[in-house]
Length: 196
Ligand SMILES: *[C@@H]1O[C@H](CO)[C@@H](O)[C@H](O)[C@H]1NC(C)=O
Ligand SMILES: *[C@@H]1O[C@H](CO)[C@@H](O)[C@H](O)[C@H]1NC(C)=O
Image (cartoon, rainbow, N blue to C red):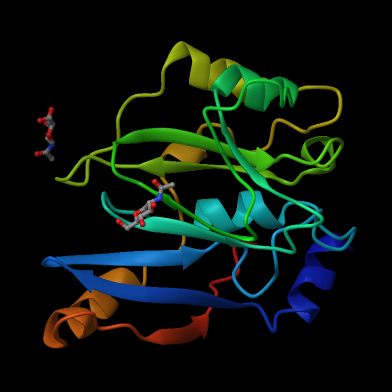
């Protein structure tokens, strides 16, 4: 069973980088934790969806994609392009192998691999960024359309995505960052709460 396989391979720990810049205790999250950005393996087809749902982002955080630049890239795309895996007109494309997207605006943001075929194989995710006071914006019609089930995808948890589950490491980690000074950076690992 897929869930058990995921459990077994739960050397799954989360990788988080804390950055204290100009008083912002922002957190940089490595997308997929310890796995590089790539086509999800058959044992973890939902790895990115699960990762994004288990992470509570705050305004000012960033997400970090690490991958071999010869093999992959990251596109930020519209909800419509996300739903159809249309790579033609990305909002933003980064392809240097070490790509950081800054979550500076509240809302839902969509990312996919820029390599043809990878999006349809599940190398895609969205993140929900709340307002500064922690409130999430209501999903737009486009957001709901992007999540409409396609033949290739089960309609799993489309609404619960608006209230991400799982523990958020950042209050404690922000406190750590706040105690530091200048550009305090720490690479930490912690157990990823399993969602099943
Ligand atoms: C994110 O912010 C960092 C630091 O301010 C900046 O260097 C980087 O270019 C930004 N990334 C994007 C994609 O705008
Ligand atoms: C957060 O801010 C938004 C916009 O200013 C407001 O509509 C909402 O009620 C606030 N939520 C809380 C919990 O204060």
